[in-house]
Length: 276
Image (cartoon, rainbow, N blue to C red; front, top):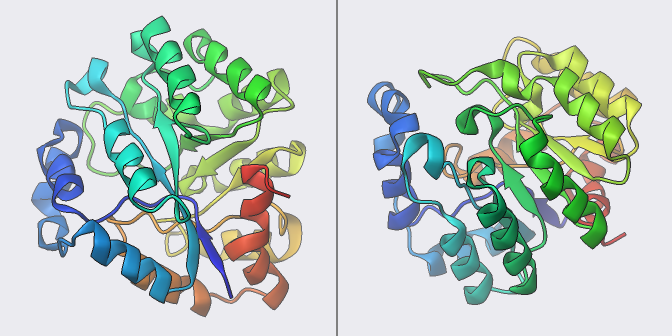
C-alpha cells in the first residue's frame, strides 16, 4: 500500500542538532531519549522511506526565530526537495512575528516549488486566529495550497501556552476561510472531542493523530477515523521525534478498518495536497 507521510523531517545530523540546540526543546532533550536517536545521511533517509512504500513525504519547515532565537529550517526543506523532488514536498515554516518579511518569504517559497505553509502557534506565542496569520491564510486560498498547524500537547516546553492552538480558534479560522485546507497536526490533544468536531464541521479541515494514538483518548481517535471522519484523517510519522519505521508499523497495527487505513495512508493526503 502506498503511503504519504504528512509530517516528516529527515534524521540527518542537521535536523537532530537543530532539535538538540533549540531552546524550546531543552527540557524535552534532557528527560527523554531523543539524544539517542540514530543519525542518518539524507541518502539513507530516502532509502528508508522507499523501503516503507512511502511515496511522498512532507518536510515542514519551522520558523520560530522571533520567539526562541533559533535558526529556521526552511533551507533544509528546500534541500530535501532538491535532493529527491519526486519524494519530498516542502512546506514553508511561517513566523508571524516577522510580518511582511514572512509573507514575502512565503510567496518566494511558492515560486521555488514549496506546496504549502507550516505554522507553530504555541511556539510563536500567537493564536491560530491572530490577525498576523490572516495574510498567509488568504494567500494560501489564492494559491490553492494548504496549511499544517502544529496542534498537540507540546510536552516539556516551558513558556508554551496550549490555548494558542486549541480547536475553537482553528474553528474560527476555518469559518473565516472556508476554502483553506487545514491540517490539525498531533490531533489537537488534549481537546480530542473538539478537534474531531472541527473536522466534522468544516469540509476542508483534516487531522492526524501523530503522537496521540496511545494517549488517554487514543481509542476515540481510532473510532473517529473508522466512523466519523474517515475521509479526514492523514498519516504523519513525526520523524525524528517518532522514528518513521516504527510509526508505520504502529499505524498498520491499529484497529482501523481496511477502508480507513487505506484512506489514512494515501487517499486523504491526495485531497489535502490538492492532487485529487
